[in-house]
Length: 290
Image (spheres, rainbow, N blue to C red):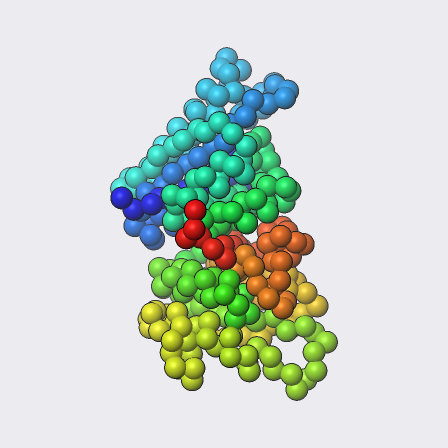
């Protein structure tokens, strides 16, 4: 059975956006959608008339109802999509990492409430990004329009090569252009063309000049181009470039070298998640070892 797209859900507006994004992704992948909530008893009861409190029900029953409503809404929009729900006891990080073992991708909103509060801006971030066995997509706002390009942040490292595989696959599924963006510090010398001259950068995609050995050769229908993106930091360069190109998805590896070192574990990841104008896909450096 084909693994599903898994969405972390807590009833918040951002989680609902993530569900809508996940449904579209499941349709592209030709797989099912699984909506998952990590349940933990609140230290305090929710405020009276809070959107997630049904008053005459306990928190667990209320969340089960919200999961059912979310699934019903997806089925109304996509009647042929297989949609399942799960409520799992445990902390958000542990539940989502476990769910990633059986997922095409893991989708979450950039902010939440309840069980998923601060999912990727606090201590859960390194746990999910560092241990997930599939790409993690952080959704900001509504789903991007059809036809928006995919942007790949790359540096020629092993992690970037895996991210390139995911980026080419996404561009293929969406039938859009792929833009490979390599950060160049703003203060580099004018004669220094690291991105263009770095063999690892070209090996990432298998440019014809490098023998066509990379991932690009496996997706001959994907039109792609490369761009050197200047900026004081990796995050600001990628955020600005994604905005300028009206990107539909920004793809990065969980670990890189040079400008992308520590991408997920440090401030760069938080900046991308908090300020990117589009969904961000973080591809783990290793996702085939349990």
